[in-house]
Amino acid sequence: MPLPHLQKLSITGSPNIMAGFLDLLCLPSLQHLHVLPIESNLTANNAGLPSDVLLLAAVKSLLHRSKCPLDNLRLVLRRSSSLTTSSLVVELMEMVPSLKALWLDDPVNQNTIINEELLNALSTPETSLCPLLASIQIPDKFTCSESILERFLVMRLEKIPSLEMVVSPRGGGWAKRVAHFGNRVQVTEEVLDWSQPEGRPDSRLVHF
Image 1 (tube, helix red, strand yellow):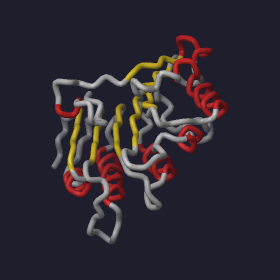
Image 2 (cartoon, rainbow, N blue to C red):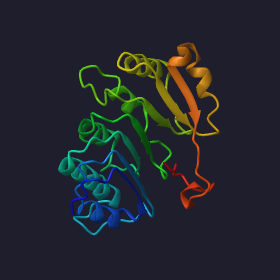
Image 3 (cartoon, rainbow, N blue to C red):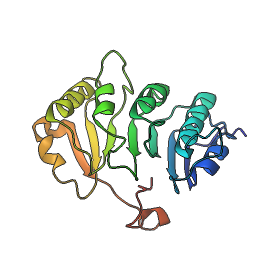
């Protein structure tokens, strides 16, 4: 189902249903992709794979098929032994060199998808993952060492003039951690669109 002019796609539903829907699409002009699964604890009846694994595979397949200039990705996934940060970094980040804004989260597990392993991968000059990345969402539950955070910011700022870190309203400590970078690192809070169901207080979705 080619939709050659569609630039933004935001969907919410069970991972299995969304995976099947994404497998039907070809979106060569897609710039913003926002995927928020619900009922992430369900298991798919497809080779015994967890539903989030199938959803990630569908996202990758869509990007490969569409060859689109994606610059904004917001994706919620539940980490598991089958779905690790490495698979996200190696197989997904390399597919989106045009990416400028990244929002990844795990609503179930204590460890967030945005973790030290991902920051390290985004800080490696040899890989040059997402060289245009200028905005990254940092969940309030995320902690990292000062050395890894410093390395990530220094490497990013070699490629772009400034970086935006989008934090939870509860994440007030981030501004102090990056204060010595001055205006080159901007810390902003998540802004929920209260006119949308996704913007309700109990929702993890940031509406764009």
